Length: 114
Length: 114
Image 1 (cartoon, one colour):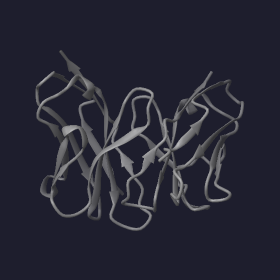
Image 2 (spheres, rainbow over the protein chains, first blue to last red):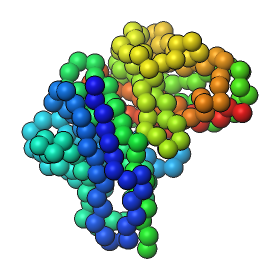
Image 3 (tube, each protein chain N blue to C red):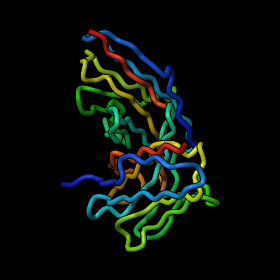
Image 4 (spheres, each protein chain N blue to C red):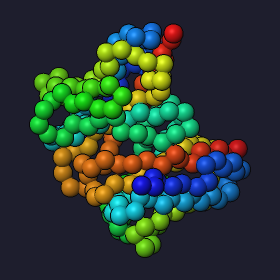
């Protein structure tokens, strides 16, 4: 069975500061890893994903994440926060096989102050 | 390219009533998902279709929830009878194929059961 743990239900940063959202996963097989963003009253939008190859993945809006197998982590970062980054962020995992489905973490709300 | 369409956006019903949600996936997407997102939690998969066949409905409360995708395109999710704990956002998503491809999400239907 696969699972995702996101540390911190809320993270607050100042505009221009580093954003770090933590995600740890468990999976019995090599995982595929995703970060989604959800703005109020909207569906989820894919930020980035790791499938195979390079462990540092770049996504939209300046976000990136690094797959660290030894730490079973896939933390999301952005060097400089912008007010428009305020949203809820979900880490998700799927198994690298057949009809695997996404298992989501509980989400982290990112708050950005001026 | 049109996204995943869902209707209605909002629905308020009394407990023990029935309700139905509709989803039109992105054209050509074989895989369709229904997720339940309770406030403060990540989305939880209810059912996954591959064309018009069910791939995974292990977390669907089958005593009250049902879903169909008769022609392998549109899908409906029904709850009968509704309980207070069914209050949630119901998200529909679609992908080109099962597993490891990006899932595109609709805006969701927010259900309130009173």
